[in-house]
Length: 403
Ligand code: HEM
Image (cartoon, rainbow, N blue to C red; front, side, top):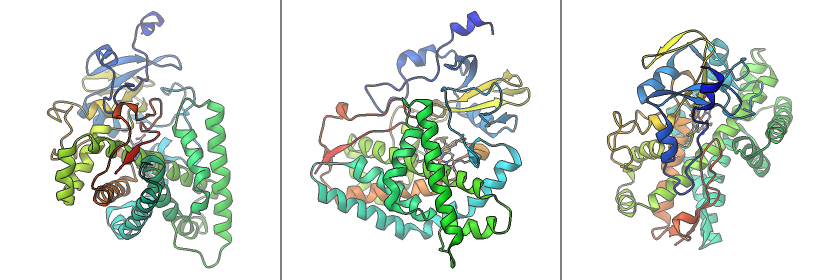
């Protein structure tokens, strides 16, 4: 690809449509995409392959011919600064990625999440009490969508919730965009310092608590298998991962269901429907819309396209989740759809480790919200609900409701 032809490629990342939070791409951007695997121009220079079909996205994310390490020369960057830090296994490949990831897998497995459901229910009910006390009207982002995942991940990690305003603000600066690179770096550094100090405190404690950080200190740090600096980075990653994503899914899901009153009524009448609905909510909203970046470490074919060593790909989770050959009538929100093959949590070795937790939080929080407030409705016209069009995790900045 010559410089001249790079200039003519569509510019990535695509912006989210301003008018409708549930429209994943502007028509103009959609029309600029030439075929299932095409090229886009990167704002940081150069270009990358854009992968849009569900089977191709899965094939790329499953393949060990691709690296997730943003520090590699030529890695496709959709933004001037992509945050990363020591211990962030989301950016690692191979054995080192697996070694660090495995330290958390047991805790986040479905059967362990089931065990903490009473705690999740208590956290949700606490948030709903605050909503009831504040309104009507009340802002469901500030009182419901943000505090539930925040309090949950704090309890699991053993991070004092009194500090949540601090790290909620930090992770907002890291995942939100429109921020200057320096500001994002500063937010990563602030969170890292905070958790490093907390881990030091936990190390000195005897006996230790049963929170995740204390457990990992005993099992991995005391035994010399893990450096405290790695645990610090891993904790930062979990705090950020556990926060913004689930919060945005909660606010977006609430808005969507309020706009589909008959479907919401069916759910109210039969809360066990929520488990399936959560999958469709994840597919339909796909809040990680920018796509996941990877770089080929050797020549590899994806969907019939040869991708050469060193070239970048952007796997578009959102477009894959709207792939008509996998999801018929994909533009329709259908709580009865079998949506389980969606890639809203990614795919392959980096597939979201927090997904059983996120699913449980969504199911419990949404069911209890709609049961508690049977007359819940938007307090402003839907078109006036403010969105975060540039954020890494798409979502709402506030959701004013009444009842
Ligand atoms: C609905 C909410 C969530 C969504 C949509 C979501 C989405 C994702 C996606 C797309 C990835 C793949 C990234 C990649 O391959 O580059 C991922 C990875 C990850 N997520 Fe989530 N996530 C959610 C909730 C959570 C929660 C609650 C936690 C923490 C408790 C979490 C922690 C992580 C971590 C640590 C990784 C990296 C896994 C690895 O690299 O092995 N996420 N998430």
